[in-house]
Figure 1 (cartoon, one colour):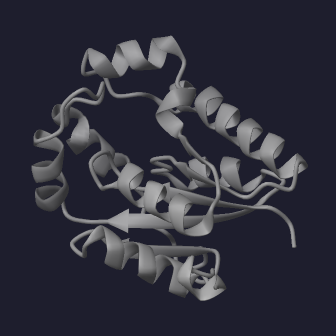
Figure 2 (figure 1 turned 180 degrees about the horizontal axis):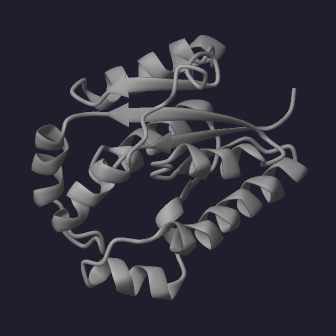
Length: 177
C-alpha cells in the first residue's frame, strides 16, 4: 500500500490543527502545519489583512506537495493541515506521490468566526475569514467518498477524529491492539 497523506482542510479557525494533531496521534503518523510552508511575503500579506491570491498560493501548495513527496519516497504516511479552499488547490496536492485524502472540516461562518476571534498568536486575522468563505469551494460530488469527506465542526474533536477514521477506513490506536 502506498504512503498516505491526510489533508485536514477548511477555513481558518475550523479546527485543522486540533484535528490533525489528534489524527496524527491516533495513526502514529507525523504531522505538518501548512502555515509553516508559507513564504515570508505571504505571511506579511496576511498579517496586514490582505487576502492571498491564487498566484500567492501556488508556490505554497507546491512546497507542501514536495514535503508529502519526500515523506512518500520513504514510505511514510503523514497528516498535514492545509486550507485547500479551492478544487484547483486540492488538485495540486493530489499530484503528490502519496495516496492523498481530504478531510474537510465544515462549519458556518458564525461557528468558525467565534472560534477564530478567541485565538491569539496567529498571523491570520479574523477579518480575513470572509475572504476565506468567499474562496471556499466545498468538496464536489465527484470528490466526496473514500478519498474525501466533509465532517461537521460542531462535534467534539474526539468525535470528529473517530468519524474521520471510521469513514476513511483507517485503524484507530485502540483497534490495532
